[in-house]
Image 1 (cartoon, rainbow over the protein chains, first blue to last red):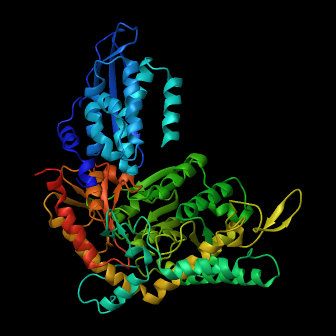
Image 2 (image 1 turned 120 degrees about the vertical axis):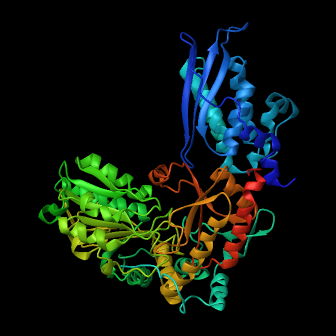
Amino acid sequence: MSSIEQMYQQVILDHAKTPHGRGLVDVPDGASSGQSHQVNPTCGDEVTLRVELERAGEDGAPVIGRVSWDGQGCSISQASLSVLTDLVTGRPVPEAEHLGEVFRDLMGSRGSGLDETAEDELGDATAFTGVSRYPARIKCALLGWAALRDSLVTSGALDHTTAARAATTTEENR
Amino acid sequence: MTTVARTGAQPDRLSAGELAAVRADFPLLGRTVRGGRPLVYLDSAATSQKPQVVLDTEVDFYEERNAAVHRGAHQLAEEATEAFEDARGDVAAFVAARPGEIVWTSGATAAINLVTYAISNATLGRGGEAARRFALAPGDEIVVTEAEHHANIVPWQELAARTGAVLRWFGVDDDGRIRVEDAASVITERTRVVAFTHVSNVTGAVTPVEPIVSRAREVGALTVLDACQSVPHLPVDLHELGVDFAAFSAHKMLGPTGVGALYGRRELLEALPPVTTGGSMIEVVTMAESTYMAPPQRFEAGTQAVAQVVGFGAAARYLHELGMAGVAAHEHELAAELLRIGEIPGVRIIGPAEPVDRLAVVSFVVDGVHAHDVGQVLDDAGIAVRVGHHCAQPLHRRFGIAATARASASVYTTREDVETFREALAGVRAFFSVD
């Protein structure tokens, strides 16, 4: 497979064509939620992502009940948003944040991918391994994840200092 | 007014032999990319490649002449100063200006910012009586256009915010051409500055300069021309164009990065207060106050990018020796070839579709495929194009799109480059299974 075919895996093309979670959904009255608008200043791509939280699960952490988003961008950013929607819906917030960290690690792997445990956790998102070979496109794949983290911060479910520290670590790793 | 040759025979275009010789002058064009594919470089509007003579001139400066310019009495200082000022003469001659009308800056962005901050300083009373002509009052108007690069919008927004002036702008028509016919209504008695591009870095459209300059003169407004995309590709005579200021950069015209030029009519530069102050721009400094040198030194505080300036001079000489009429004719043919992408199903050109008063910079969208994805597939074929908003978000917004892909040519671009590009572009929609 050529490296461009590794980048545009069928699963990515499919998600880009029929993305999951597209179309912002109103949050019911009284429900806890967060929203974030993220822009990629170099290409003008943008997304508005909304999370609706459900009451705490067994371990006391809030659970992501629904992810919806609106935006426009390249197939990588759109597919990444779609995969993210599938991946984090129904997950407790700390788990979603953890997956975001693993995905950021994948994007820092320069095409070599992660170990089996990490790839099992990421599921379809592993298909973005090929993207990590193209430094200019990594930000496309990360746009949705940045919006997710920020919306969790605005919802109050994620401590912004934790998120900021994680963001710094990710930048340093790159 | 500078216009592009329209149709018919172009006897003075570069011959095949000349073009082959030109390409041999550019070492980078010989490399391969993405697994051994020959490079097809169609991103010259972002930055051009450099001929060997520019690289050699910079190396030679460091190996043989490096010294501080305009100070020191030793031989090296003399030679360095001579090389530095010769470059000013060559760059000035290239745009038909006088050496004393060319100020070195770090680039075109810095050149435009210099004008805006000098106007700010004049507004604050700096520069005395002579500079009062530049001062802005609340309610005065600054005019730009919807076709501008951010570098010719944002500094004016900031100047307006600092002074209380009002920003107005020309719109563009559906071809992306500035609606110059609106000059009488957009430029009013309150207009003090009109800043506009000579050639759009997105649509390639050439702006008719004369109607804007004559309307600006009617109301006593200054004109500032962004000449970044014209000077590398057309014969440009700044005196004939009649603009008050102009900005262009070396790196888009085969020269080094990190250096550009601000042109100002001599009389205006003499009245303009300095912006960056310090060494090399003063006459007498006491603990309380200082007096300043005449332009251009007044605007060149601190150590300049000397080696790059010398390389800039070499780039101007290189283009001058090729002959800009021939360069323009060659690129006119390339523009026509590039515009044939409009025949590919699903490809839509943003900008004039005919090679008339437009240069070889062609932005486009592919239905159903985002510009980034278009660029990636082209890159896989060894073809370098620009994707995104090209630092012109308002113009993209005008067309209701966030991003385009852009192919742009330079003197070293060949018809074969364009053919390779067209073939690869024709396969893009199939790659993404878009019908």
